[in-house]
Image (cartoon, rainbow, N blue to C red; front, side, top):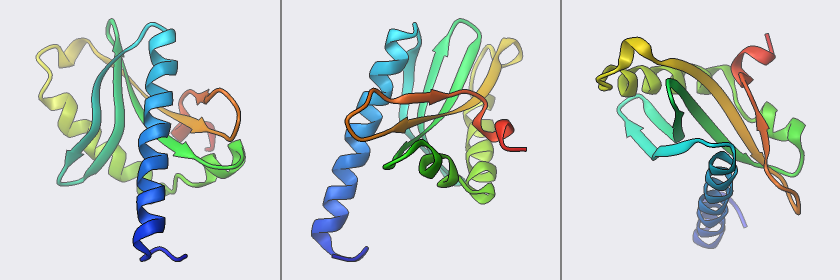
Length: 125
């Protein structure tokens, strides 16, 4: 089954939705409110946007077999795309000047509770 196989694509799509649902659940337990799911812009898509007070999380969700594989799945190009999409979302917020933004990743690993990695873009530099 390759990337163009309809069954493989459907399986990946369902795995992605399940991963985002689990990631949302994790954020809720930490006191965040998920304000956007699969936020689409001309620059790209953000998996989840969550808020707790003035803190906004831009979250990339990766379902992978290991934490390292999930972290490696976010390329520099993906980072720039996500940052651009986040700028568009932030520009539409009435309280933009009071917000703090953080770029996080939630790794959905087999048979484990998801792992929340804060500041994922900056942790690798």
